[in-house]
Image (tube, rainbow, N blue to C red; front, side):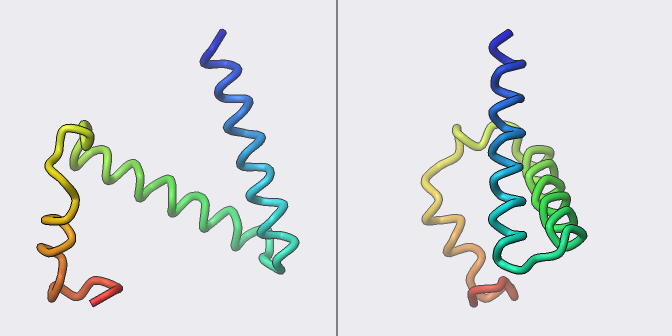
Length: 73
C-alpha cells in the first residue's frame, strides 16, 4: 500500500511539473519529450551504476569529465 501511495504522490509531482512548464509556455509535446528523455537518462545511469550510493565522492568524477566534451567544459 505504501508503494501505491508513493506512486500517486509521484504522479502528483509530475502533474505539477507539467502545469508549471505549460504556464512557462512549453507545449504538451515538448513537456512529454523532456520527461521521457529525463526518465531514459535516469534508466541509463541506473544500468551503468545500479548502486551509486556506494561510489566515492563525486569530485573525482567531475574532474574526470573535464576536457571530454561535456556541456560545462
